[in-house]
Length: 376
Image (tube, rainbow, N blue to C red; front, side, top):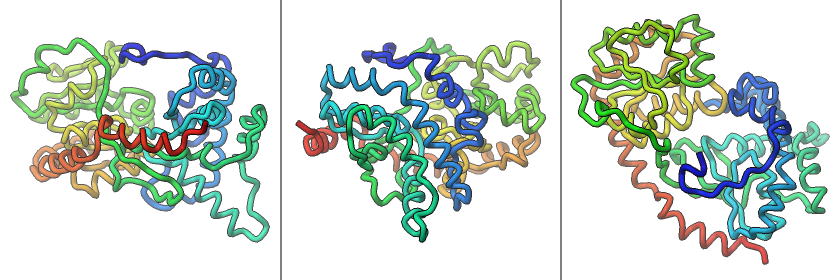
């Protein structure tokens, strides 16, 4: 995927060392690494301590990247390292090579919020509170290079945030730089019908694509065919964005199109609504396209928060996971399509987000911050 985008790739880490991390990436909520998910909902997070402990376990799972990644940075000597918020070895590699470094988010900043919550708890507790679970992980990645602990090795020197700014969690010690989300799905051959304006409202359904959707179907007892069949009697053009393997043995209504591998931006541009489980990529891409959304949140990171934010903005509706069924989905989608206010608000939200700086606009800021933070 990296090289197909026209970029150079340098593989680091062996598969056997990163097996637990691979499982976590496929499904955080069911992975033994994070057992229970790392979601921070729109309200108070009563089990923040357990989630912070699980987060530090994910940090530790990336420890096998440390030596190779640091070696690449020292040899190449980049000016700036942009890193995934879980990849603490990247921050160490930047520190050792003298580069400036910043985190690049792919959803809400749960990590900074949990870190701040843990620090406040320990500071307020008379006996220092609980042992900080981050300490052991940081010791493992700092000791080989004799580095002292610095908070920026966990939270970056600054953070690039592509999510809607008014969805941001409070993290007073983090400097955020907003950037507009630019949907990207790679390249694919697009069918001819996708270029034409649909005769009926086109609705994209992504439930069933990926483990989160399958989990929703398992918990509800409904099959993908049941869900799509319940929506097929609406006066819409229904497009199921699922992998071909999930749909090949299903008996689907004739009016349901199944797409496998079509980039989401190309599909969303002609849609009147999108139904999904609240993942950041679909949520932000639909918002950028001005498409009303119906979210059935399946929590693993920020899905509940995305659904709550969508409803608060008035750009869509949400169906609680415990109330999900083909019938409830049918009713919610029908209400969404019949009320023009959702489309009007989604269009206004798209224009609001379009005023954020794009990646090219952010470059001068990155250059200035790099000059400030770079070490000789």
